[in-house]
Length: 415
Ligand code: UD1
Image (cartoon, rainbow, N blue to C red):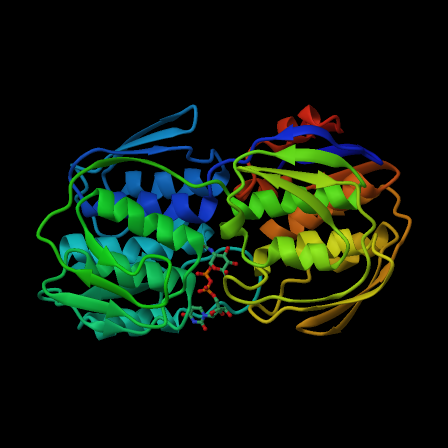
């Protein structure tokens, strides 16, 4: 287990380069199973979740090489339809291997997927999608088993679930006939996956909308594709800059991909300058407010905890309403140890009183996005903050000890 040691309070200064989007990369690695030709992903983030997905496709027979954020996948020798149980259980996104595996083998098996401890996280929408394609779904003690004689296009309803939408699309690209995904989630990473599939020869209309139409093709080719920047990482560093009253510039920001994040923060007093794809966070006085998480383009649940850390520095009482997951407030006790005043009203609502003076403490990260809140708290706090179990944060954030250190933060990582 690794830890970050941060000496605060920090003042950030300089230019931040975001990595490629985790939530696009993982699905694109899964999508490589849909072809027998080489897939090259540029701007692929070197994070633990990506490493886990690579291990999973290697356990199926794929060969990979990964350096300087370029991931090369040779899926020609994939000959298994059940990824390694141990790794599959570590990462919930392993469920996105199922659609491509069914498309390739007409069958798939997967150990019950794990992931962050942020609530119940049901998979019923995925199972419904597979059944709508005529796939037999069996829930066994240790795995889900899927089988079909032939995949035929269908209408599916993934109910705005991100990964279920991706499974619905990836299962359909090689099915015979037309499929329509109604109530598709429309996150930018899903649009990027569709663009990648199109570059492989898939026929898909409606990218970035709630109705996606797929005309099945017989075969997909390899591709070389560049992954979009990670909007969640961008949102996290924006919160870090605002929370420390810093001025920084962030490269590769696609404003339209940020949903309502920028406008919501502006309504709380944040000041930004956006020029081309560069976003400069200006020194701002943040006031309290209400934030409800929603599906895209609403306020991302993944940015809920980083903004909670920011709101500890806002003037007044703020309220957070988490509408997607029930255990996404795991950071409260750790931030309160440092002097924050955060009260949990119920499973979905918290109240934050600010501004509060924070002091360094020994804290522990319990899930990926909670980890982001703790890192921001460490930047705000006076003195030494030790964040144990930082590996869980590194599931989604690439080399932040280097990125923060480049912005002038006193931070070290200890293995
Ligand atoms: C994806 C993202 C995650 C993000 C989440 C919501 C990946 C790898 N992860 O997770 O970072 O926080 O979207 O934007 O892309 N639901 C069901 N039944 C299902 C599936 C989901 O009821 O079968 C519910 C969930 O409990 C939740 C909501 O739908 O309330 C959205 O979840 P979903 O979009 O599926 O999240 P993930 O795809 O797991």
